[in-house]
Length: 91
Image (cartoon, rainbow, N blue to C red; front, side):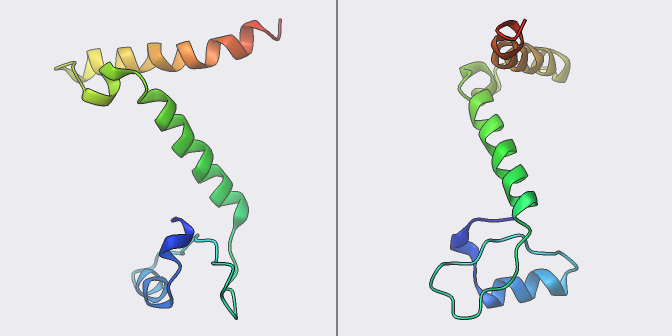
């Protein structure tokens, strides 16, 4: 999956040769635009935005924790901090 900047025929061909289905939206100036799975592209964008929100936490972005257990624990806390307001306001 990639952004419109990676919409080149040679890149698409290389991906297909390696057995990878490219999910890249075509540029608006293409004469014969290839098809794109926009649902998969939308999901990629949502996941990318989630990682950007998690990285706003300095401790996650710089990986201060030495062990994987403490890092994953703080990653869970950061995710809870992001998602909890959505669930509290619905009740």
